[in-house]
Image 1: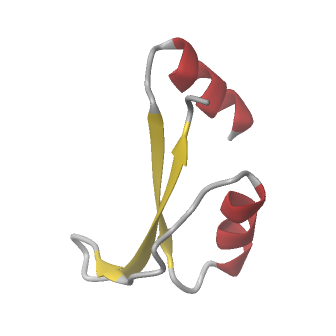
Image 2: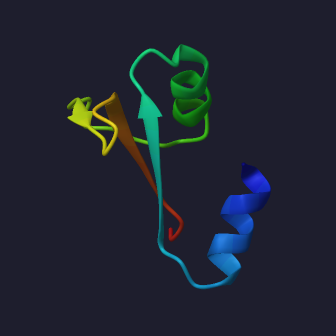
Length: 60
């Protein structure tokens, strides 16, 4: 994931967005440890799965 974020930053992206299933505790913990933030609001994705949206700014 760190490599993907570095590539995105080099390409000029300013924000990384990740959609995580609410029951995927390991992925949620990983994203939080990398500084991603979430409103903790549960969304339904296109497949009607409950997901959380995590965001991380790539600019200081």
